[in-house]
Length: 224
Image 1: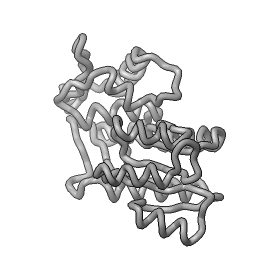
Image 2 (image 1 turned 180 degrees about the horizontal axis):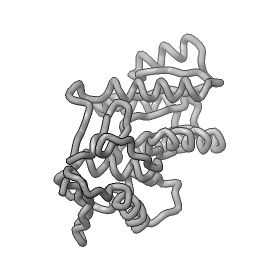
Image 3 (image 1 turned 180 degrees about the vertical axis):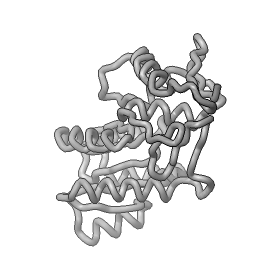
Image 4 (image 1 turned 90 degrees about the vertical axis):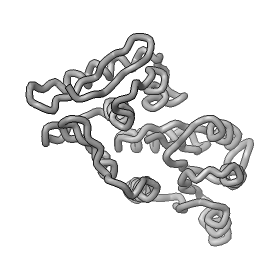
């Protein structure tokens, strides 16, 4: 799940992005309202964390434009403007939640997870491919009944593959899911994570899962 973090304080943005990535979320950052609006026009996100006091375009204007385009992406406003008028204005304009600075990281993470759960389908929350299972609420993988230990980027790659199981996922699409515009990486870095995942998915029993490379097309997750 990709999150857009819109925060003009660079150090706070880096700290928050790291914390969210440690929670197995893919985070892309924008440091002004105009860049955020541009990204929201062309990219899909599961959640937007939005500051209000931003250069080049105010956060409320970013939110207003999102909702005017018909976007239903959940928005969590995270701002020092915590007065009643600001909260009411943000919520009335279409924000889903509002958290004032300063805040505790644990509360932010809990609110993010609650918004993501709320936005998910009410259908079955477990996606399976062979003996590999992904719980879309806890966002954990199990393989042959055992919890699968994954780094945040391994997790992001495997999640993208299992949610599109049976379909080939292009390398550049995986790259967009795993890396943000702030990361200094090439598309070929995906090969490293595919190699690591193949090692972790090695199993001799029934229900084993493999990742097939289709040259020039991408990667395919399927039960053997």
